[in-house]
Image 1 (tube, rainbow, N blue to C red):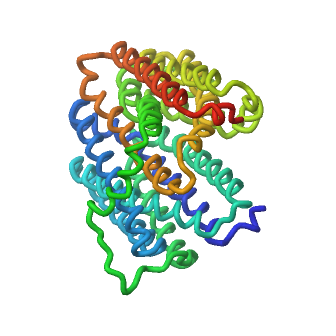
Image 2: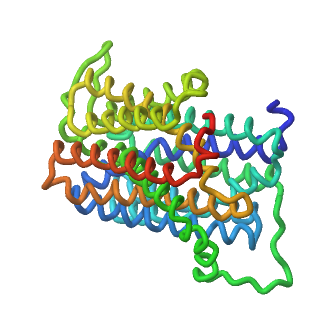
Image 3: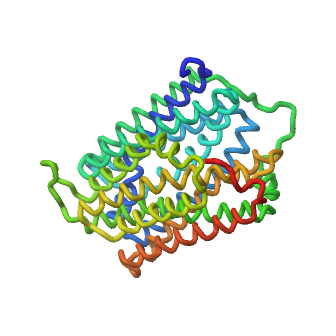
Length: 411
């Protein structure tokens, strides 16, 4: 089946595996880097700025890839990522240390990633068929999670003492990604010629107006934003919480600090997703979708709330198992209902909107860092529980608005 995929698909999955591996070496831990350089509140503001820019770049990139072509935008984005990673190395040499330059390069790298993402996704759709698309997305999801797990393990062990080595590896990976894109990827959507194209933001946002008029979809999406704001606590408050208060523990002959613990928790989560997606999906088939969603979201939320509050290894590992199985339950049930909320003739605009606004979940997660000094671990854990509760209420509210003939969809 793999050999039957279009060459562009195979190469893009391989390139995305490399890129995800490289980014996972350092970027999940950058809130810790910024916290050491500044403080929790400034870190929250800086992370929010990065997220908002990435959000806008993703929206704009989706429009530009239809105007200028997929490959052209991919090459431009890969070049900017390489430039940013080289400057991060230069900003963290042993002879001097410039956190502000590191942040600016993170900022630039997020813009590049925002441009690359819609171009890559559009290219995969361009050259896939209805028969191959399910397999393509499955293998891409598996590869991305595997890359995340490997990158987080390596990054967790080396981030505190060997940051320069990790950034150097990132430069090498970005060089490889750029060269592979240049020499192995072919264009699937030619640049528009002899057409007057409007590339202002007004033209971009005009295509989203019809989506905003669908009340059910907006409510459903708001629930998704709250769920994502829970998940993104891992790279925001939870990362700093573990770096500050985790009780150093020796387990199986290995000494764990806060950063290594974050790496372990993420690796456990990713491993469970990779190993148990198929059996859990079979288990929830034909069961009550709403009940499975509520159960999964509850476990997912409680797991993250625990991680935001506790600081001992056994409880943290237990929490990672809870949230992982919760994620396996809520994600497919929520996705199964997404199609019910979109008219067939407008799915493109709806999917673009749904794929872009997840950045708002990151904004909420980052904003909670600003209030962290006042709320403390217990306050943040409580806030996470309320976010999960809000997600359940909003999602069930939206599902109640779906016509009865669509309410019994199988997962």
